[in-house]
Length: 104
Image (cartoon, rainbow, N blue to C red):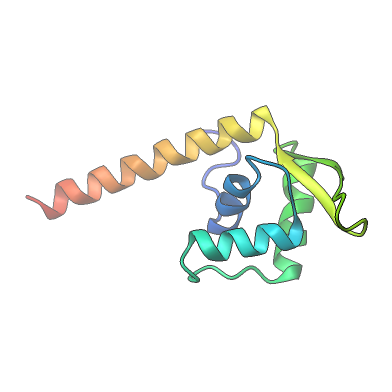
């Protein structure tokens, strides 16, 4: 268990989105697509989460989008990848335990 666990659903999807560098609008669209439209990040939620993730060294800014100079790019750090792996293991355990109980 780490100090970042459990991740909020928004933070989980943001970290997954940042395996490759991406800007805020791209993150919003990626999260919506990955969740089949179930999770819709508002700009305020996204930028608050990005600030928090950056402060905790889970993501880093990687520069400016070459196609739009107003967009800042972000990418997950090695620590962020570790936190994401830990969260996936936690979620898998929860699913296994839930299925085990329901299948009894």
